[in-house]
Image (cartoon, rainbow, N blue to C red; front, side, top):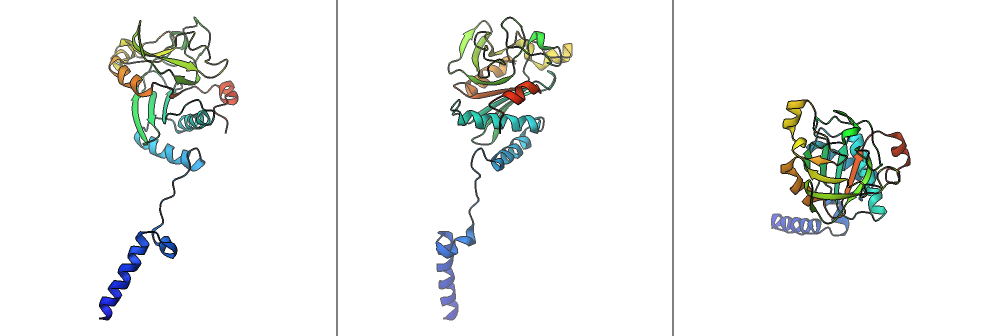
Length: 237
């Protein structure tokens, strides 16, 4: 009889615990999700993303996440997507990542070109000037509608930083595909082919990549330029 009574009482207690009721709530502490944009959230995202993409520089990733948070606060982009291009890496390496921050997934990690006049293997010179044939650095957002241009399926970029990339539309800086953005070119020539300033990717990647990042998602094009890093409103904080 006492055993049945004890089992009955324990059953009631277990039910109350599972329901999270009052004094029994401490038995089943729910995991605390850090608020988006907090230092803990940034640290968690870095750990999650780096576990999937070991070739991403964690300091560059952190800057990208800070830019994403500030862009959200400024109402620039509402999408939980972040594209990072790291031009401190040579063109022989996969230096573009597209990250789904909602689900903690690295969607793309691929090769990307830099401008013809920015350098050969390494991009070291950047410009916002039309006709420079150089890449631009800084924070961009993608346009909504892809189009068929001279380089096929393409997506325009809007530069968000005065003096660094705000002439991107005027310069026709777009994501597009190119035969010279294929690793076969690296094996043949020792470096990836170069564009006129556009971030070109391999032809079999461009359509799914563009369809993923279109419609006001954030793109951070990184280079350790102190003037940009110190003056960008997206990197503060």
